[in-house]
Image 1 (cartoon, rainbow, N blue to C red):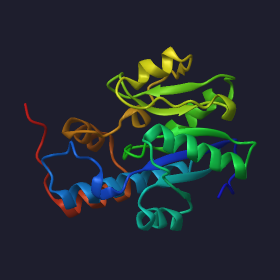
Image 2: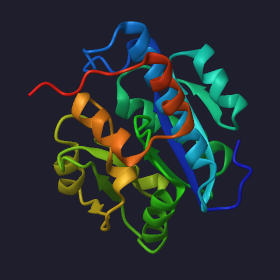
Image 3: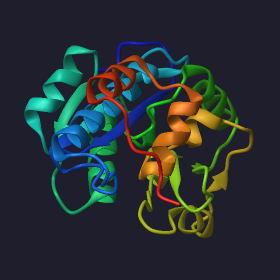
Image 4: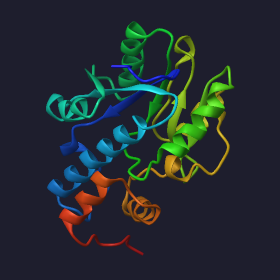
Length: 217
């Protein structure tokens, strides 16, 4: 599961693609599922090309889709239920059982433009930090990455997560980190990710879908 050199274990929560990206309402259900699956695939691939990442553990309620990410080199475990933060805590515990020397890094699976250089830059700062850290999303209110030593690992994803993490003592990481901050929740986010340049799986999914209506104004 964690075969690469480095001090970090990425914990990636992945919903069943059929239930994800509901706010991309301009797309059909099957198109949203295709994109959600492609986003997660590109994130796994980017992580496994990032210096410092020992491996990726996918926590998912979709065993069949998780198996496709395992083929790409990720470890997998079942989502225990109880919401996103419970899934992340469970994933961190599974990773800790396997490699207690690794620091867990919770990462969102909807970062289709993520490039290894941005993730590596963030982790380089984390490596010099003793305490919890997080990355604000482009909008400034959400969180795309959270990390802490295992004993202090307390993710607070959800509405207003950036303030929740900061309020709990986590340090916001500096720097542009544009592809790491660019999550995709809605049409605006998708348009911005396309402008940054998405990974190959997401690009292929978009080509299969065809022209995507722009954000409503």
